[in-house]
Amino acid sequence: MHVKVAGSQYSWKLDGAVGTGGKVDFAVTSVDVNHGFGLYDPSGHLVGQVQAMPGYTNHLVMQFTEPGDYTVRCLEYCGPGHSSMFMALHVSTCKTGCCC
Amino acid sequence: MQDRLLLLRQLRAQRITRIWLVTSGLVLLGLAVAGGAMRLTQASGGNLLSADVFYEVMSVHGSGMVVVGLMAAAGVLWYLVSNEIELSVTVNRIVFLLTLSGLVLIVLAVLVFGYSSAWTFLYPLPENPGSGIATAAIGAAAYLIGLALAVVGFLLWCLDFLRAGLKRCGSLQRLLGFYVFGPAGHGHAGDNDPTATNPSLIAGTVCAILGLSACVIGALIVVLMLISLVFPSLTLNALVAKNMIYFTLMAMAGWAIGGFGAVIDSTISLNQFFHNTLWVPAHFHTYMALGVMFFLIGATYHVIPKLTGRRMRENVGRRAAALMGFGGYGLVLCWYISGSMSAPRRYLYPLTGTEALAWIAVACAAVALTGAVMVCYDLVDVFLTSPHYNLPKPAPSPELAPSEV
Image (cartoon, rainbow over the protein chains, first blue to last red):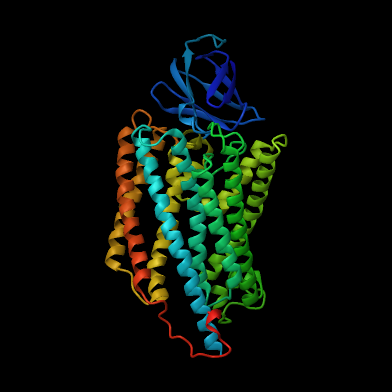
């Protein structure tokens, strides 16, 4: 599964679906300043992060074992709206490993 | 004549160290209060300061602390090595003016022009601050110029230190004390030359060498960012800019000695979970607030009697140290725990589950601040009530005009 991620002040844009059952490759970039793509599991723990940088595409490969409502938070200070730069990410059940 | 020259040098060192210490002590207190306001804002979920003001305060707190650390260290080192090497008084005055001007510009950039891109000024954030403040570009320029002044000041200090050290010891090898391990340069073990093994000289030399490389790279990235700010069509590589900025800050702030927290923080597999969480401010406050600042306060109590002829109140110092130690370690412990629970740093509010820790951190910060206020009150009180010098003044002589002292 491949997911394109673009950060911008102060929102995330994710292109692609995420599910359990296979590796998920997040290709992360930024359209303005540096951001931090931080993935929090449904219980609020950080499970992975990678920098979102203008001019670069960085990859974060994750394997989700539990479906549920995850949260994407910005972890690199990007301006006064930094704390409000988060979005929900639903990880669905997918036993075939295909894109759900 | 030799004795009088030494006395003259001591009096100069006393005056210079007093100015550096008092200035940095008062600025330090102001910045610590700013840090306390940030803690209170964060614990209250952003109710005390707005987001704009919170991040402005964060920017001035971090930048100011780095500059104050340089100011105080320069003053104390001057005193410690003044009997061994002859640093230039003129260079010191220029360094003091540059550093102070840089600090004033940084404060103006934040308070007047609304700069809020943090002390790490990660490119291209200063150009694109996302705050909606009309004067933010002027603020970014003022901030970068202020930082450049402080960096150039520190560069001059490093160069003058190495010049004076090399003049006294003859070679960098002897200045670093390497001859202890075998014959080198002009001397070898057992030649009874105290200069080559003076710990203050060796420590100062290491700082100066590290500082030189940091300042050159720091000045370069600041100038490049200023050019990019004036000509937005000229863009920099964000990764290269980030590496240059962090190398400069690491070398200037002694990141390499960040202790156990830094070792864990730099382990890649663990860093996945700790990086950009409150673990990060915990580890650098461990060495900056509880390492460097404690050294500076200890040095202040040690040298003040020699500088003023009056002892600071040791019972006040002990109580202040206990308060600052208890409050300071309590504060960083709250951050270490919050960081391990995935609480992000530089957030306006605590994440669910860390609210109680945020309030305990506020209480600990208040305890530490009480200690800092006690030290500053004691310091100012000494200078307001003490005689200027405790050393005997030389007899009037046509060769030694009062203005020279």
